[in-house]
Amino acid sequence: MDVAVLPWRDTKRPLWPLALVVPALPFAALLLAAATRSPWAWWLTPVVILGVIPLIDVLVGDDHRNPPEAAVPALQASPYYRWITYLFLPAQFAALVMACASWTRDPGAVGAVGLVLTIGLVNGIAINTAHELGHKRENVERWLSKIALAPTGYGHFFVEHNRGHHVRVATPEDPASSRLGESYYRFWPRTVLGSLSSAWRLETSRHRLRGRSPWTVRNEILHAWAMTLALFTGLTITFGPRVLPFLLLQAIVGFSVLEAVNYLEHYGLLRQRNAAGRYEKVDPRHSWNSDRLTTNVFLFQLQRHSDHHANPLRRYQVLRSFDVSPQLPAGYATMLLLALIPPLWRRVMDHRVLAHYGGDASLANATRGYRRR
Image 1 (cartoon, rainbow, N blue to C red):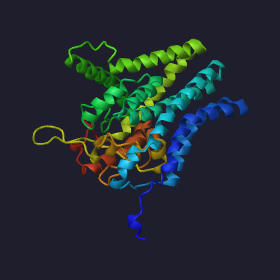
Image 2 (cartoon, rainbow, N blue to C red; image 1 turned 135 degrees about the vertical axis):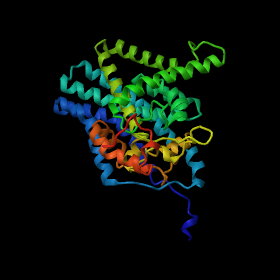
Image 3 (cartoon, one colour; image 1 turned 120 degrees about the vertical axis):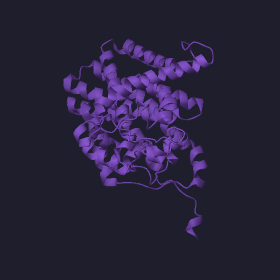
Image 4 (cartoon, rainbow, N blue to C red; image 1 turned 120 degrees about the horizontal axis):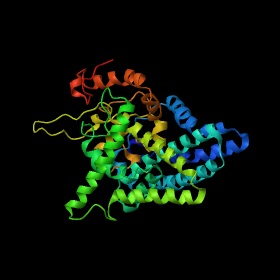
C-alpha cells in the first residue's frame, strides 16, 4: 500500500492530557506533606515545573512536525482537544481551595513560601489556558477564559491581549513586547501598568463608540474583576481573613509568570514600517519559538507563538513551526529562569536578536541608547 494515502494521525494526541498534571501537582504536594510532615513538601510544584520539566525538555528534545493542512479541519473540530482545556479549570480551582485550607493550618515560613509559589505557578500557567480559550469565537470558551483569569485578578488580560497586544505586537507601542537590552525587572512595571491602562482605554473606547458609559454590566473588564472579587470574597468567608495575604501573593506570582512569558516571546523583535509609514503585517519572524516537545505539551503549544500571532483562531493542536521564526535555545520553563538573571539572559539572547537582524541593532526593538554587552 502507498503510505502517502494513509490518513495522518496526531502522535501527540495521548500526550495532551499531561497538561493537567500542572493543577494536579499541589495535591501530590499535599500527600507528600502529610506523609513526611515536612514543610519542604510544598516546594514539589516549583521543583517539578522549574527543574524537572526543563530537564525532561532537554532529554526529549524537539518535535518540528506540523499537521498537514488537509487534517486541520478535523483536528480543529474535534472536541477531545478542547475538553482538555476545559478540565484544567476545575482542577485549578480545586487546587486553590485546597491551598487555602492548607494555609489556615499554618504550614510555617518554608511551607508558606512553597504554597504561594505552588498556587502562583498553577494560576500563572492557567493564564495560558485562558489565553487559548479567549481567542475562540465560542461564547462558552470566552467566558471560561475569564473564569481561569479570576484567581490572579488579571481579567483585563482578556481585553488587552486580544485587542491590544495582537494589534501592536513587536512594536515600541506594545507594553507586552520587551525590548533588546531591557531586563525583566524593568519590563515588569512597564507591562503590568501599561497593559492595565491599555485594556481600560480599549474597553472605554468600545463603549463610548456605542454611546454608552463604560460603567456597565457589558464591560468585559468589569465582568472579569467581578469574578475575582466574588472568588476572593467567597474564599475569605470560608477560610477567614487570614487567607487574604495568601490570595494576593499568589496572584502576584501568577501574573508575574505570565509577564515573564510575555518578556521572552517577543524580546527585541520589531515589525518594520512600510513605504506608507505603517507597521508591516505580523508574520512568523516576529515571535520567538521553541519546538521543545515537553513544554509544548504542558503549555498547549504556546511556544509555537509565531503561528498563533499570524493565525490567532487556530487551536493549539494545529499550530505550526516555521523555519523563518527565530528560535529560542530552550523551552519556556528554562528561558523563564534565565529571564530572572539579566546578565545571563542578555549573554544568551542579545546576540540571537542581532543575528536575526543581520547584526543591525537599528532594526530591533531596542531600549534607548542600547549597548551590546
